Image (cartoon, rainbow, N blue to C red; front, top):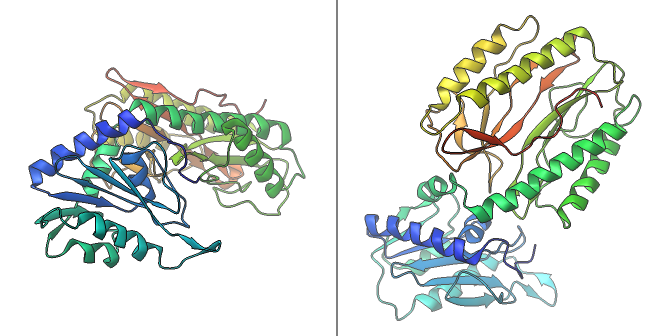
Length: 373
């Protein structure tokens, strides 16, 4: 991704800027500076990959600067688009963050002294901080993460493309998985299906592609008859991550125990679909599913139940007893109940992506759940 075309809607980005400005007013911030690819994209509609160091800044009056590597973009949710040299004679510079920060410093000159500036504590480098003079530095990252919980229409459209790619991957998986096929071949075929579905390179390739185990990267190991193949797929399209999981019986003949466990896990999804709505505590959903799965005649489960997805593969809210989140309208959650046991070779994890609406949840990943074709 080179940032030449907007990845999100310009007007929607301006709306997100307006929401951030309200936070700035409440915290008496004179400016906000963001440097992570996710937040540059979230606010300006453009994203660059890890090789580059763009940044965006917004003043309290709403004026937005976008600093791009090498070439300016033509359309962005920004009032001033400037550039720094990311390459010299096609060689990437190692001091790009310093170069981008220098552009920010030039832009800030003559705009008066800054008293309070918000930055992302986890990512903002000294190069940027040094341009802010004596301003007090505050962490704006928690607010940005809070804002990201509720997806706008342009975000949902991009996210749905990533989820649809999961469906294409699973269709192909059911065609190629059989005893003897190696995991790397499955991985390669599925990546090709995702690229074809998205029509461009992926931002990320996904999660678990190892057969006969709970998860892991693809190996040269061949698939074995009798094993269950958990495919936890997380392709990312234009920076937005899907996260779905399906299970395939390698030889197409699941055992009675495997079918029983599959029915139990699918029942857990039904519990979530019945309970999830704005205002409910995620712990309540987790506890209900935990009780249901613990009553299974075979298999155990002790991991999280799910999490939000978006510009990161794990976002709020957390369906996890280590947090105490409450569902909000507009969130997209990945829900992944599971059962594992050696007798199940090695178990099942089925994951759907849901949009939280005013009245409940909508399944954004309605492709088949079955263990066979």
